[in-house]
Amino acid sequence: MRRFNHSFFFLCTLLLMTGCKEEFPVYSTFCDQNSTVFPDCLHYTVFDVKDKKALEASFGIDNSEQCAYRVELIKYHVGSCNNPVVKSMGSDFNGYVRIEIKKGFKCYYKIQSDYKDDVNAAFDRVLKRVKIDVNQEKKIN
Image (cartoon, rainbow, N blue to C red; front, side, top):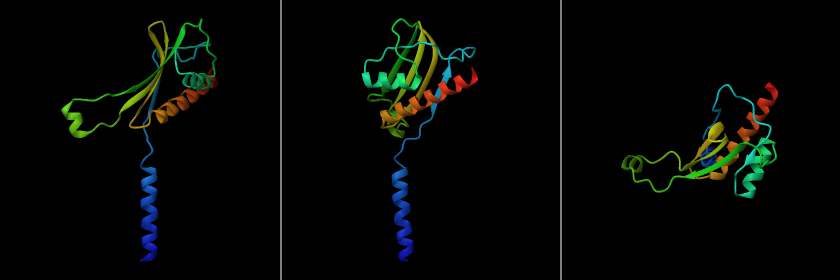
């Protein structure tokens, strides 16, 4: 009986600790399926210095203000929702983090992940996937 209690306690603790981690997928795509190459230059239109540095590190390209390819970061948090269906059922997420590369007003590449409570975890997931996409593109070309 004592062994059962110890095992039960350990299992409950493990479930509590692993149950809090957000596990949202990351979606990325080149908007024009004919273009699968990252540009040689990027202009990061991000005001937060820490976010800008994190983006530069993930893409591996320094900021170039003369570049036609613009990187935009959106950290969207859903405000109060008055939809009765959503209120009664709850929502699966509270917002999303999206990074887009645009040339003019045309989308070139975008990547996004939703989050429930942790916007920083979503930002980290997106940055990690950017590194993967950039490395895959380098291997192909």
